[in-house]
Amino acid sequence: MSAQRRAYYDRIAAHGLTPLWEVLGALVPPSPRSPAQPALWRYAELRQYVMEAGEVITAEEAERRVLILENPGLRGQSCITQSLYAGLQLILPGEVAPAHRHTQSALRLVLDGEGAYTAVDGERTTMRRGDFIITPAWTFHDHGNLGDQPVVWLDGLDIPTVRFLDAGFAEKAATHTQSVARPEGDALARYGSNLLPMDYAPKPADPTRVFVYPHDKTRVSLQAIASAGAPDPHLGHKLRYVNPATGASPMPTIAAFTQWLPAGFETRGLRSTDGTIHVCLEGEGEAEIAGTTYRYAENDVFVVPSWHTLKLRASRDAMLFSFSDRPVQQALGLWREERL
Ligand code: GTQ
Image (tube, rainbow, N blue to C red; front, side, top):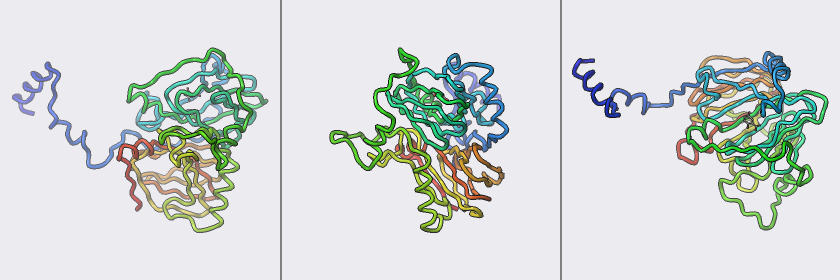
């Protein structure tokens, strides 16, 4: 750089100015260049460290005893993609993770152990492996373990999105455990059975009042469509979770999906602008992400950053759960995908 330019940049810097032409290519790239990297977390290797957290701190002291899955390209930022956070939460028998609420939206995918519950706005749901549970923004929630086994689930939150917007609020509830206001199953009966209360008129972006999508029901649906026809070449047998009252994603900031890949099946390459976190609930196989192959097995988590081509293979019948910020991108007219 010429001495004249250098001196000029230094002089304008003192006035809070900087030249666009030095950064234009990076600011407006021809296609996404995510700093996030593809990565896979092997549950069989991580489980011991998750259990060890139970010896290091109590759920109550921690408020939430979670090991964050940090993207290797985004260390220190508590995120798995630029917009989403993921972590493994442990709750031991007899423990309570005290009630609080925040403007961040959360999902849980139950992975290991039985006997825990999550309570959302006064209703408990028993956490069974594979259940997809949500706690929408600003709903009080607490977790407890009434059983005799450690229970582990994957948390997915829009923490980085809310941080980006500087829109985070949180508060603790007056009591550790919410009092039970309605029997278990109430929300599913009222909002999740192709029926709705007479006076219920949700706005388009309202989160669903159905806060648990039971694994057994989802699996039955996947099995039915898998035996009814050939898999989509790019998706296998894939369905999206919805707010049944609106058809929109369960929460406004996070989309979630479930997918069945028959043994021996391989998807064609697909890339999309929503960086996506996948969890293997059943079976095993390979994820080829931008040319690098990762082997996945039960309870493994892998992340596909924005605009990285994904090919999935199943060596045994595989069931995958996934989530992303797709509804945010779609609301803003930004979402793109390319099927190769
Ligand atoms: O369960 O409320 O992994 O507030 C991070 C923040 C879980 C929770 C996390 C949270 C929670």
